Image 1 (cartoon, rainbow, N blue to C red):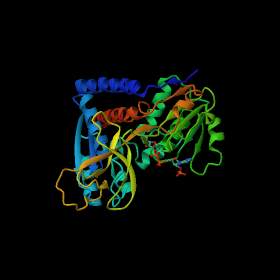
Image 2: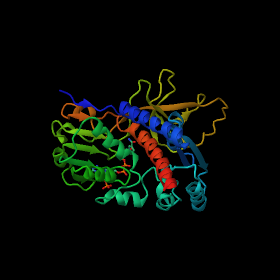
Image 3: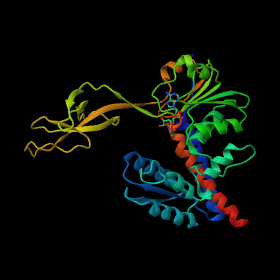
Image 4: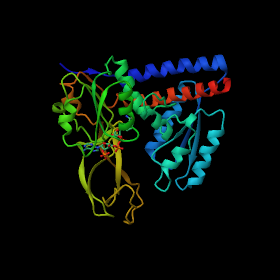
Length: 355
Ligand code: NDP
């Protein structure tokens, strides 16, 4: 017997459709269009891609997105000024500061500057504080943890009275998802890098949430038969390509494995360096081309990779009762919950207006 697959793509699509319906109603009844402002500082390609997909989701669901892009030299004051202007803008119902921010910026101060009422990421200390207190309701719940709960609830997994073990205690996943499970009357155990007996502790879980960022760490013998396992991890692991060979970086002397562009490869590859077709000298990404006198166009060098979770899917699938895949599990839920939070932000501003 294998686990019942929890299809995050299908559940996220359901939530997006539900959100599109209430957004249309809000527009029809009250003339309000939910607006999400994104603040992107710097050129991090992954951050750019995340912001792009959030903006596309807004458009699909009938919401407005307002993009603010600042250079990675932006000062603390400049970023805080953008946040202050967005706080004051009545057409903005949600503000998302894309993380990570460049190192010279004070992330805690910037996130704390986002108005509590527009904190659609749910990272404001007051929202996290309310989430952690009995009988208090945060205005917004962080999106990935909220997505994990939706996956369980919509798959019919009972939470109340169950033993839940959470692997990871980060502010953005482990801690808030633990608080959400506690609110739903699970008995929680939070594990981290100093936990003495991880496999043994995990084996006690009826619900196991893995959010550690360690590729395929959770094995079948960590899992109680029939448990619901939610895999939050997104890890990139290198896989072999038939044309892989070893290169030595002409600049740093480091050796690396890569292959020249393969037209049949669709996605799942990452550029790691370049090679000069004349002298065959290679260099790692981020290094300058060594002088060899040739002006021939350089050839890119790639490595093939795949995404895996924190759970060894093939192994755990034999034991668990429910299991999320990676990709296609928790990942699609994050944006769906962000869209839902932005709608809630607009609803909250309407309630404030009506009084
Ligand atoms: P962090 O690195 O912030 O936290 C990792 C946590 O795991 C820490 O609490 C750490 O313990 C613990 N940990 C790390 N290594 C071990 C170990 N060997 N044994 C036990 N505990 C360990 O990660 P995040 O919470 O931000 O993310 C976790 C994973 O989830 C990542 O793969 C990330 O990419 C993914 N993610 C996925 C999202 C999605 O949309 N699907 C959204 C956000 C994250 P300690 O506190 O002691 O250091």
